[in-house]
Length: 395
Image (cartoon, rainbow, N blue to C red):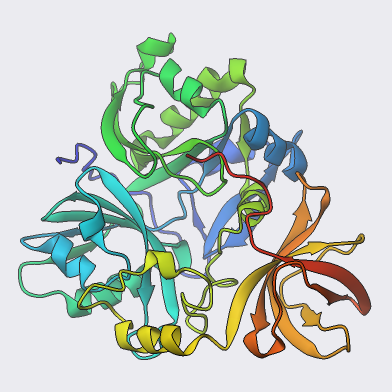
């Protein structure tokens, strides 16, 4: 596949002691956003007149739009680029074809820990586009560059693009209003041109915008992620909000993104995944191409898988009013520490506290067992479950 969104425009780098800003920063400020530092970026946490609960509800019942431009962007090109990426990252690109995306992991060769979790866009044998997490992009690019043979180019393009996530049961209607494709299957993508006149909007000075539409997301709802040239991000953002107004669209911040992904049991790097947490421990064996001859960390992960991990990621649901938070200790009935909460929040959908927690295998805990979490000195009762906490409708 060809990629029409090659651009030369770059958002300016801030001074080294200041967080990066999205190309949509001024749009967020105009909407009364409350900003928070995240992965070296200043990003909207929530918006005035909404708040996390309303933004969360909009995605579950109608449609929300997130600016996730802090996510990294890296392009690998050259003869054998796809084979090279496949020999580095965990999942098997051979399972998919051009025009498909895949969740995959960059693992450490020596420990098997997760350096980052990534979405890989496969354009063809000589072209792969990666979306890593903000704080880890430089390290992922460094590792790929260090391993790349002659003829393979690894380019960090984090400033060249914005990423907008349109999520919720009415997301297809919003994109359809703008003439964008919506019928492609889950984890597939296509290039498209946004013609503003289709929705009765004024066409910006630069004319129609070429972008990539992918059927992906981090909420568990039917949705799309748009990879947009940074220089056109504001016009596309405005068009989405205008087209989505009849469908109840809301601008949503990272607070709602966190409650939505936690309800799905989706891991967050730095909490549920890290260089100290392996995909085997995090129940991400499905994102590992175990039959591939090579990927970073293959031998140590295969050994851990065969021996069974010393700890495993489980879900917890509060049986009382306790709200678990990252870092809190999980206790057995006898008071012995048996694990640690990695992600925890109040679930707006279930109206209860929920968490992901790494539990020691030696404790022998299983589905529906009861444990307690030390919530600021009070022992809150929790039930052990397998996520998701809310039934997904992503597919």
